Amino acid sequence: MLGKKNKRVFVVFFSFLNFFIFLVAVFIFYLSLKENGRRSFIENEINAMVAEKEKIQNENRFLEEKIAYLKTSQFQEKIAKEKLNLQKEGERVAIIKLDNLENLRKNEEQKKEKEIIIKKNNFERWRNYFFEEE
Image (cartoon, rainbow, N blue to C red; front, side):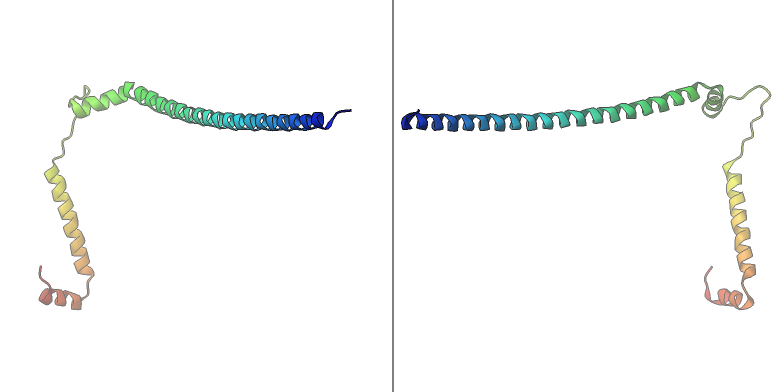
């Protein structure tokens, strides 16, 4: 059988072996945690890039629709009329002066004020006549 010295060497050897196995297990656990963190970081980057891709695709669709609209004859005609003051053959242009519009608005406001005055009773009209400045 083994002597006390050999038995002691055997116990010390297995203690170091167990300690070494424990260190290897801890190191493997640390590496797996590090790899999981790296993997989640990469997945987050992928998700962000997919979201950015979708955003850019939506923007491209919007711009394509806008380009299609800008190429239509209706839009070109509208711009020609507004910016270049052009008109089609046989088409007549009516110009409305802003002064006339302002006068119409003032007349409408005056009519509304008269209606309000008419709706007031006699006492209110006398009170306004004597006590309110106009």
